[in-house]
Length: 464
Image (cartoon, rainbow, N blue to C red; front, side, top):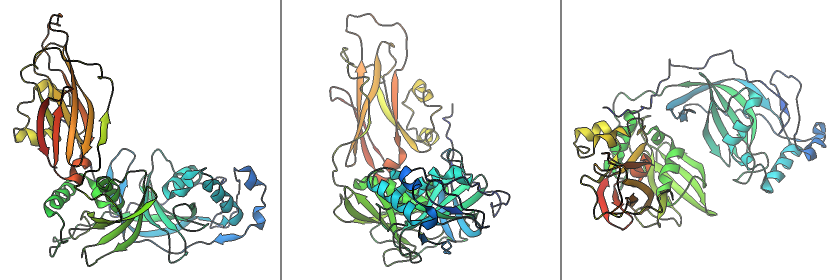
């Protein structure tokens, strides 16, 4: 029996995957006056009553088409099916949409956002997705990737962002600005859409070796780079995803605001590249400094340090609940001991662990229960009873993390000593799936399985 693993496939056909024949379709825009570059009549159809009463013809134009191009920019695209691929924006083609923003409209929209309404206007990707249908895009099928987001653009003096939209084999670069000022409380609006030509990154002929980043754990960095080279954990190539995933170690969460504020191709810290990410957490500002420990386009990013009043890695941050359920809360074990062969396991690669004999003691029926589980980005925490009656049961009710200690709380159930049992022979088991990134960003973690009485069922040290 082989446990099946779905692989992340990076496949881009040909050197260039932009093709002609598709032009975004324009429908009445609810947010701003839109004008085609071929001088077709502008269309305006605001959906807010207060805006509809304004005369758009009298509005002041506050933003014009920006000519700035983004080329040679790398991006990791996540498809709707979870597949990730890395591309480079080689150049941009013709402009298919030009949007002229009207002051009266954007001011009304900003007022709505200030009141706590339409908060999606504060996120560039959400703005593009919300307007996708107007331009012929498909939210359910297309990919939407934030390429750049700055609050002080040299060309506009205010916020500017670019979102790459993958529409089948065709790509478009959507440009947005903050027409009412810069900052995380200001709205974003689309100003143009251009065709984009993307190519597959070329690997360097030779590895770039030399002085590394001082103080960085290169044993872990090498493992991460090897995983990416094997087509796994592709998020490590995207600085924003690295900040969000590794930021969890510092107490940050997906609810926090992450913004790239500086990019350096080389710095005194890392000669291969440095990116500073601003994080707004609990109304406080922090800066995550990301570095490239190796050279080349396919080199990973990782966190060098975080500045500000922030929890440092390796210090307790309180108990964090990773998984919890109450469906076993009334279970009790009434027998004097557990069946022989009762045990626990952490399974992250059936083939690899089987070769190392790490799974030799796990009953085959327990392993078979995981045969259809995709462990590409997961780790399965498993608890099982030895061969026994199906009247006896086991379940995982809670998984918590404190510092580098992961505790898996297990509950067991059995009839009373004098009660009859089902006369069969099974291996009751239960498992929960934990994000693999938890182990990769935190380093080695001590995993302890305990039952409802506090008895330790098993311990292990896991490092991926």
